[in-house]
Length: 255
Image (cartoon, rainbow, N blue to C red):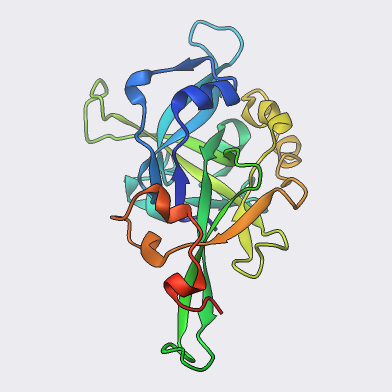
């Protein structure tokens, strides 16, 4: 799964890397190395112009945690931060978004926790299970383009013209973890290579079976796993140091 990630790439770089044609500098987010569910996140998506014409690739700020259009309240968002690739085409909460509202979330990488047991002489935690956090990122240092879905939710409690009348939310698609990551967690976010961006973002690609062929992760070998400080577990901690290697001497034995 994916429950926390880092996103520090500036909007200008995202615009260039993802060939974005439209974005509002007023919506720029500050860098964050500890993004948690329900936080605002940057997403690349394509929308058809109101006056007609081809889709326009945009950089938008969405809220992480999908709220289906039919939901009575936005409180379901925290439970819908991830969508399984094997069922996303059929689950009521995701199937409409999967058909034509797919997006990409550019992130530095994401965090995952592994349960480990302390052992060895002199280990004060001998026999005690604890969770060791890892940061998963691309070996080449480029942003990870996580496959996502987005949805519009109308808040009936406020007038139609109110700025808060519409909530736009997103979820991250997950798939089976590749061998490097499987010992830490059996699932990982689905990330895409640049050659898959156009098809994934294309709102005209609305046949479920055709879209499902895009739910394939790149070949293993593009990711690296870095043990990091347990400080990332507290969302009040936020800085680039959270993504850096922490040695066993600095934070206790990892295994």
